[in-house]
Image (cartoon, rainbow, N blue to C red; front, side):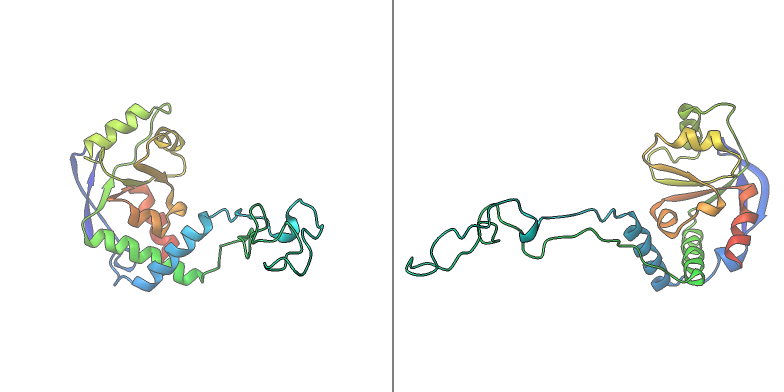
Length: 209
């Protein structure tokens, strides 16, 4: 698969790069994508939810009324869940939502995500670029030149492009990662995936193992 290389102004440089069909042209595996996205979202959950149960409520344990003769149900403690201010029955407890997936499955999911974006013509390859200093305005100008200022985008750049990464952090609809930071969720969550020319080899080597 050959893709034209653009510069940061959005103009065609006249060059094309070859994308591996093993990474960008496979038949997408929907179930692998589902599992990888599910794991990613599960890992974002803090799991710090907590409600006090009966044993954790501060209150008297005195029997609040006599056992018999009241005409109502028995009640042994004001901390009972049936009373206002009592403990919660089966309340949420802190837990870890993360789970493990096979490395090969995760690799398949990422290749499937990239192949889906390539199939829909949502992959853009641009020349390597960097900024002399971190400036959000310069990154916004790149987005405008590529027609991505009003849509979600994912930029895959070289690890050395620290200024590009910092320039993008304040923008809600744009995310910048290096080749090792690609995941299925961010690839599919973007309307366009913009790949710097020098990172293609790294992406292909990481996902072809």
